[in-house]
Length: 301
Length: 314
Image 1 (spheres, chains in turn red, cyan):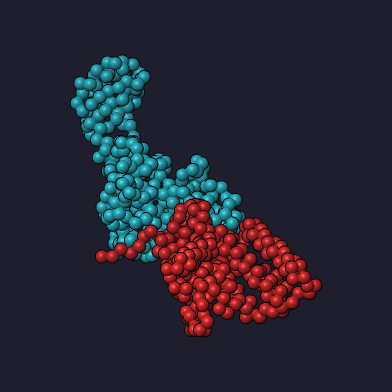
Image 2 (cartoon, chains in turn cyan, red; image 1 turned 90 degrees about the vertical axis):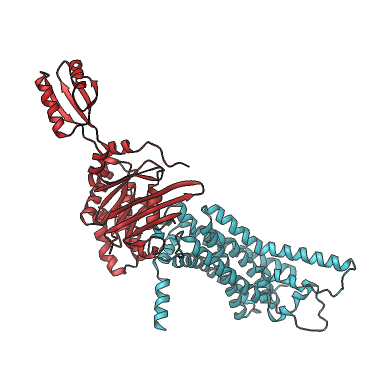
């Protein structure tokens, strides 16, 4: 046990992580990024509090209001994480290649695994710093009650998971593409697909099925709930499923559940399928990045 | 244990239809300083990248201390210190931190690094820059720092690709002195350079590569003897240059004579004995000779004699 703790400690204190943190924290850009993030989140929180407060016509905020504010704030946070993660991770390998430092690093004893995972962890460490710096904003929500610490923890765990997902895609493309710009663009493309692409595909299937049903050629009870899988791998819908455990998702697939029978998504909520699916994607992305980092591989025979 | 530090056999590297290396072979014994010369695009950097485990060969084998670079890259990396022709530095790190990073990356414990780094900085004359940001160093200092980085894990083989490129004369001299010291420490060094006279001073052997093929490998003097079968004699006389030219044309082993002011340049195929006999004949014929000498051939002459110019071809 102590050996594995020692190995873990050694890994987290490895020179690549140490160097990455030093380089990242010594640039003024990091400070400006943190400031810009907090200003954006602060303004957003201010606007939400004002709009919801005014539209509800109440002079005092209540539990319902703080619940809505928490959800909106969390979506904003997810959006900002999705916006920042590719920018912070998609250049970690390609920029070393552009600065001509990568070859020097690759001739050291550091394994490809250590280099890739260290770079991912250091990038995520910075995003974590930013997200945790925004925690006091959530404190405002707590002032009015209605949100349990469990909910907050689950949302933050979801944020951290997404940092790893977006980050692993960023690292993969940073390894595959020689130019940072290309890696950043492709990573943003993938993240955009996760948010918008999966939603559009779902809508296309949904409208196709409903048209088919309305044309009279199909049963009114045609089950096409499988299209919900597209929403389950959508970060926004997956996060929403953390807030609401009801059967709201059934209406998204025109499922008439008058019988009360349990379906797949009653057992496997969106967020769980999301975590399972993207854990596989994350591992595949990291394995591919590790394999692609060094050109020389052991040859068979 | 192999007596060779580097063994390259039938090494080929293709980039699509472009053949950067066309099956080169050479070996370098331990402790040898090997000058790797050739025109731009001849395949020097490609060969060095393969040796540094940064590139996979298309065919053939490259071994470092008996270990195949494609089969045991991790072990090979322990043996080598690689300095590429173009390299960057981490600008936000201090010189000391820079070496600590690479020392740590080679698995050297921090305590050992604390003792090692001052010694390395002293070797490359950067002791006074220990706390300076790498960004603030001059080009020459960065080159020397990179050399210190190569040495941080005490490698047996140094692969130095154009280590003096872009340096001013003073920085080149400093670099040369450091390399001489490394040579005296018994390191095996493979070094490429365009500045051939610099190499000539320190190399034991050379390899000339052109169009992805080795055109000459071995001891400089042997190659010189092979390539320079014709000697060039310079004979300076006070007068009667035209008469001397006619006289020389009738002498054995003289291949051609050209007049350049008071000096006659003679292409001569004889050896030392015949060369002495020729001088005797000239003096007996009554010509007044001011000087009589064999023109020295250097690495540049060898390089020009061997290479036809231009880099690799499709």
